[in-house]
Each structure stands twice: as C-alpha cells, then as structure tokens.
Length: 447
Ligand code: ATP
Ligand code: MG
Image 1: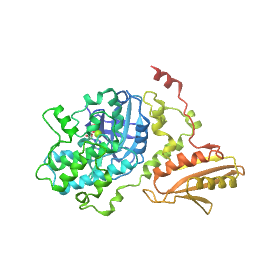
Image 2: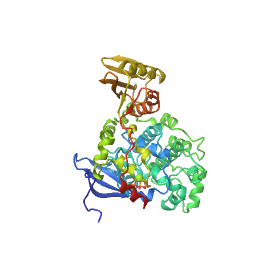
Image 3: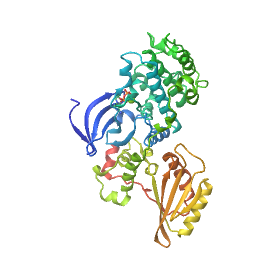
Image 4: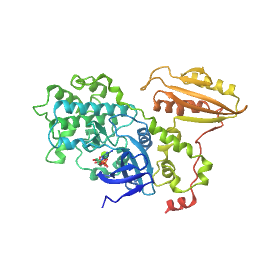
C-alpha cells in the first residue's frame, strides 16, 4: 500500500515508509535530479494547526534551516500543499539507535561516544536558541558511519502546540524521558528539560532499560518527580555521580551542559577538535537564496501557477497554517541588495556611520567596503562586504554579503542592526514585497 511510487513537487520520488510518529509519517525519498537520498516527514496540516504557532516555534524552525552540526539531522527544505506540510531532511541510513540498545546494553566506551555526540549537538542547538523538548530514542538516529544524528530538533515544538489542549498526553506513549517540570506543567526551560532527557538517555544506553520505569504510570510520575532511580551495579561510579547531577528534579540546581562537558568521565576519549562537528551550511542557504531571488513581485504575478510556487509562497498562501513568519525571505539570504537614490559618497559615509554604530570595523578594499567584527564569533570573525554599483550618478544598487563568519550572526546583525540603521538612504530592499493572493485561493480558504 505504502510502496506506491509518487513524485512530490516534481522533485522527490517518494519511497518506502520509514516510520510513523504521533503526528507525522516519514518516508524515504530521492531527489530526482541529484539522486540524493532524503527523508521526508509529512504532517497533516489539520493535525498540527489546532493552536497558533508561537513566534518562538517559528523562529526555531526557521533557525533549524541554518543549523549545521554533524550530529543533527539537517533540514533541507520545507514544502507545503493545501493539506500537508513536508519537511525534507537528511536521511539517516543507520536507523534508530535504540534498535541497537534493544539488543542489549552498550559498552561503556560506545555509550560514552553517543552521549558525547548527543551533548555536543544539544549544546550547539541551544546556543542557537533551539530546544528539542522531545529527546527520546525514536529521535536518535544513526548514519552509515554509526554516528548519532538527532532528528526533530525544533520540530517537536510543532507538535507541542498540542500540549495546550491536552492532546499530546493522550496521544503519546509513556513520558519516560520527560523532565519533572514538564510533567507538572509548571512551564519550563527548554535547556534544562533537554539536559534531563540526555540523562535518561545515558542511563538507558548503559543499562538497557529505563531509570524510572515502573508497573504503574502514577508510580513512574512519582519517581520522576522525586528523581528516584537506582544505578545498576555495573555503572562506573563516575557515571552515577554525573547522573545524580543531571537527573536532579529541580531544574534550577540541575547541572548545565558546560559543566557536563567539564566532567572527567565525559571527556575521556574526546578529541579536542570536536568543534569540527559544526558543518558549513552555505549550500542550504543558497538553495533558499535562489528561490528568494526568483520571487520578484512583478514576475510572480504574471506567472502565478501553483507548480511555480516555492515553499514559502505556498505556505504564506495557506491561511489555515500560518507559517509565514518562518520564512521571511530575508532571514535566509546570504546576500542582501538595496537600491538607493543617494550618491555613492553619501552611501559610503552612511555605511561608515552604521559600522561605527554596530561596532564593526570598516575598511575600503578595491571597490569594496568591508565591515568586520571586533571579536570572534562561533565561526570566526564576522565579515560583511558591501559593493556599490552605479546605475545613474544618483541611483545606486548596493550588494551586501557575508564573506566570513557565522551565517546566523550575520543575519541577525543585518536584520536587527544594519537594515534599520540604513533606512534613511535605502529606497528599496530586494525581496520586500507582499505576495498577492490569487482570488480563487482566497475563496477556498474561507470554506
Ligand atoms: P514523534 O512524532 O513524537 O516525533 P517519532 O520520533 O517516533 O515520534 P517521527 O519523528 O515522525 O516520529 O519519525 C518516525 C520514525 O521515522 C522514526 O522513529 C525513525 O525511525 C524514522 N525517521 C525519522 N526521521 C528519519 C530520518 N531523517 N532518516 C531516517 N529515518 C527517519
Ligand atoms: Mg521524531
């Protein structure tokens, strides 16, 4: 039944069902053009749109598109049709980590490797303001090299909208991995509850069973709330000590990731070049840039037919599931273009003023203006190039792009500091347009 071949958006050939979660089905698929294997997670819009998506969730999913860590399943693309949302993700060929644990507990060294990779990935995503909230076996996958890949980072938040009407609780199985403060619904800090789940995962890897499992659900809740579990006798003493700090029911005193990383057991066998886990995500961003640049307002209206829409357009047209905030085009661009009706010298002096204001050093190199950060970010010094093209002496086109540093830092600087500060000299920013909804689409949505 599920093996019927179909092609999605003329781009992906859908294959077998890889798995099914609470809210979505995940299929294997192949990019027809490149032959690349991907996993496509398909949500029914209906099932996830009960609650309005919070800005936090929109920001997280949007950030996930910019996140590159070798232990996090990458989110390549988001697409949508009227009834479904598709997340095109990296395919983790090795399947679920817990299929391995199901065959028996892991050796200390192996468990530690996975735990190190888990913590490194969680730390990275947290540094981007993205929380998992649903770290559990089904979301820990392996690639062909046996490395851990966490899936659903930020995406589980989509399903979380369900929490509000209580449906998540009935829909989910046992909350064995969930932190006490999440169960008690007192509102919680995503960082702290992810740390808790990492502790449960470490326990399960080494023990082969759950720390809080009990015959009754009530008893299990009680054990979680009290942090009551027992380390089996084969656990190294150092691990028991570390777990005590992680599985602390009080989120305020629970150990931080930074402290876990300083732990001597944790550090064993860890090579110092662990930073290389952060991978370059330029290619994903470029994909988006391409579509973003194609959607020039005028062209789009002339050739408006669904197959030509990119994901952003489709999603922004679907009123039932307001994801528009996720895909503000300017959030994903490496380049930013603006036009100005000022002279080149006026533009240059404005850029100098702005650089000073946002604490960037400015250099003139050839025909370029270089704006450089003063201190190193996650991926080195941020450097932005601005190039001014003369159309007429009083009409210029200015291209700004990142030449080095962290993409997210660049985009934040551009969006929150540079763009607002340039408003006096900018005539238009490329991409600043409102897509008009075709009439029939609007009518359909009102049904
Ligand atoms: P939940 O709905 O709470 O997230 P879940 O994690 O079990 O539960 P899905 O995220 O929908 O559900 O995934 C279902 C299954 O599909 C996973 O358990 C996994 O086996 C498989 N799967 C998910 N993502 C990938 C991927 N990127 N590569 C390979 N297999 C995947
Ligand atoms: Mg999942």
